[in-house]
Length: 336
Image (cartoon, rainbow, N blue to C red; front, side, top):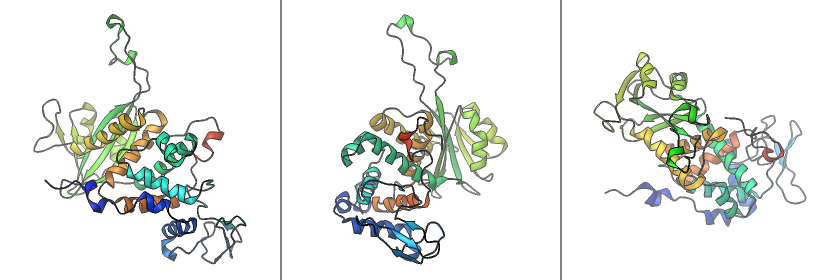
């Protein structure tokens, strides 16, 4: 039996101790090299794109540059998801390593204890990291001639606690006995060319599986072979795709159809919900789903490669609209 990838040495190319032992100047160099790879870490003005910049550190030693073209000052994190940061840069890099080393997910409470910061700080930081991960599949399309894509849905949230006495309990399957907060998470997952590995994973949240048809059609190439289960919501897919179905009340798969890789995605997010977060629903469901999609798509990458990918995504994304100053306003985060 072959060794699981996570047990191999190839999965460990970056350690937390290595990051924590970095001097602040070295952390700055690492972050700059990932943010500005075209200039080998030489600062580029985020305002006008000019690379003629000179260093003008603050008296405290905090890094700062000034652009010779537009005369504006900027820092390492200006214009990124980590803009306006208060903690040392080493702490943010360590948070990324801790977050990525978890296979199923990382709770904000546990991260707050690891970093010795407030829960509020860890909560916002984890959601900014999820926002970076989500950017990896923004506007992505999958499938094509000879490619196979699996489609499936699962319901989250809206739990109704049963009454204590059996005679007082109601049938929670009926719409009138539900809270209306239950949401359907639909995933579109591409298979690898060998049929065993996977391509990209694209999740989205809807009220029901029927509401996901336009989303599927916009994200999956018309020449794709689509695999789905026996749910009547997927009957309309036959009009656009070569669709193969499997009846899960009879079998998990057959020679023509299988949704096991879509089910694998749901298995990961269910374990994250049970073991780490305990409750995933509402406006945040799509954020946790996109995090799980990133972890699924990059599960064969070393933690060092995942670290570089996420830092690059952090630097390419503008400051978060939803989580920049999150605790200073009363409204909840809008759905991404």
